[in-house]
Image 1 (spheres, rainbow, N blue to C red):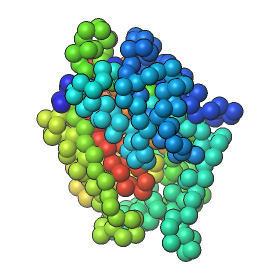
Image 2: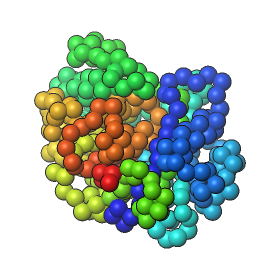
Image 3: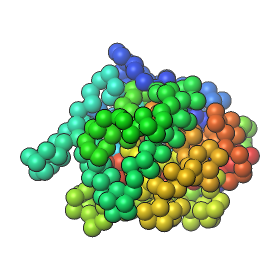
Image 4: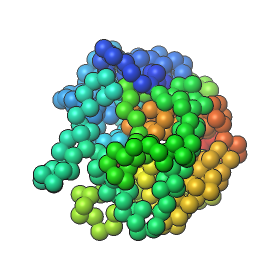
Length: 376
């Protein structure tokens, strides 16, 4: 599968607040931009793959989106893997295209938790809710606390992730939050669920994004400019609930990462830039370790010493990630990866290496990895 499919077009709405907008209308806007970016007409698309909205999921959602797009796809579906679903859908599209089941696919997502319902993020968590376990933040606070204690991580090292991503977002004119912070400001930010500070937590953003996937052969026939090859992808899922896991500082994301790198035929040294899911600051740190870029317990120091900065060994989340660009779950990371591989990113990383992208859902329950190569 290495390089046999490409991402031929990308599009997104503005991120932030869209009062009065329906999430499907946002998807239509993002999809229209992705089609224009690829330079193709919508009647050429015969696959519509949609990430299920976190707020107020509904049955036959994929078909509702296809109806709004004015499309009658050969393959249409909606998938729920939390934040891992977008890369999962890209991989399913690539495989279906390879099998001849469809020709060109649009993968899209949209939601309005900022101005609409955000109850999914604050819901009670099973039987443990009677002890106060409410909200997404509570689960990540547990992971953060264990990682912090097990490896004696100074709070300022988590702050390095927040400061770096916020700095990148502050220089991104499309970012929801365009405000850099200092480490002192991070340390002074209030606790949300201790030890998580406000600036450890990602945004809640309205918005939508879409990408166009087709075969490399089809992209050549259509003379798509700067089509970005999909070199590898992989998935993995945890079966353990958070508090039942044998090790709170390790996840199965390493399986997804290893699968993607093996398919791509690349070593870690071949990766020039990373777009890693950063719903909380601990998330990309654990992912860096699970992917093998850092030894266990060493990613926080790596971040604090500048390893994830634009001029560092592995620049991270160059458009701001979930902490600054948009709290939408994951497709914006893919889009920034595409821009880096095209060579037209706002904060372009130098070099000729590949890009690795991670998506994850739940409390690091579901994982998906994508490796992108340079556009021809």
